[in-house]
Length: 343
Image 1 (cartoon, rainbow, N blue to C red):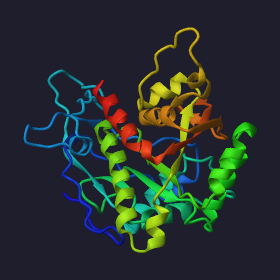
Image 2 (image 1 turned 135 degrees about the vertical axis):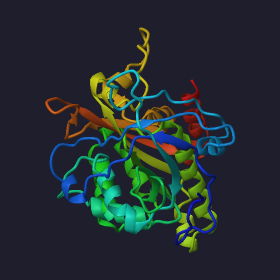
Image 3 (image 1 turned 90 degrees about the vertical axis):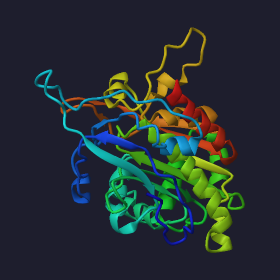
């Protein structure tokens, strides 16, 4: 399938993605239930197999490089060697944001990005902004555009939407948590309206096939470049001409939480004398965020208010990491992300 055109998104298309074999995907929890209980990651289980020779991968067409095959991860043990596991053929595709089908799921996926405080953060307004921004943003879906997204990536202009409550709250949050030695630089970045500034937001179910990730990030950069040339008004086109983008990532302050999710690569022990910043702040939830961190022009981190729920009885601390990325560095970053999956 090709990407469906939406308001403000004229003529953008993507190649058909690879087909995966997978267990049936259960619906995400409803929005009303997401505001209660522990802060726990949703999971679905996939078994990814190599496509037929004539099937071109989405990740391959976007990144220009063949990615490695992910190892099989059965959902449950077989009762006997002769029993075969039932598989359902699922096709993943990238779609533009769609308010009707995407709003509630995006709101759920936003809850882990910033400390959840219902009085201080308007997640509903931010979710609405994401799903109504047709020119920039990509939703990962299975079996059609009418299904719920399994993940997304987008970039919001912090200056163009400066009057929205959610944007004011995010700016205030970032400055409040910024250390004194970096506050002046961060304040200047957030207040200089002459240099467009973006907020890169991404989240997904923790065990989506990693083959999709390089293409997801490359698609976002293509969206930004398209919007700069083709968006509706001159003001909107200029607002996407980002000089920098801010990324707020999440880290687990425990190897157990990191390995429990299975969403990244375990870090090798550093030799004596090497900088020890990474273990200090934890292990990135998504493997590609480490690449963003290594390429960032400015970084800082701080403890999150809420712990990560490893199991029903165990919680571990987690941290937030703020990274300021130069837009011109994104192509090189995306190339490194693709190469990580080939290693």
